Image (cartoon, rainbow, N blue to C red; front, side, top):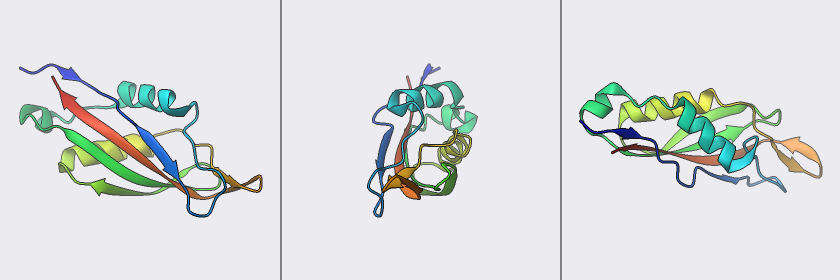
Length: 117
């Protein structure tokens, strides 16, 4: 049986088309990597079938820092995608993008790797 490990690689790149700054996860990339490592639940069916992959998501961050729309950018497996979406939905509020010192909506790109060893 394969041993489960979670590899976190390049977990976040944030961007916003209309903001002078970009949304950031509270505590930065390292904090997000820790959150993912602590909270990821590898789907049992995917484990049994040896399914691995990186789920790439684009998420909308509202001006209050809460997560809005979540879009799967890279399809791998439905169970992995649902787990990635669950993780993102349960993230704490982000620091929103700012324009001229005022919080504005923005987008962030998050990649969640699922790796079995």
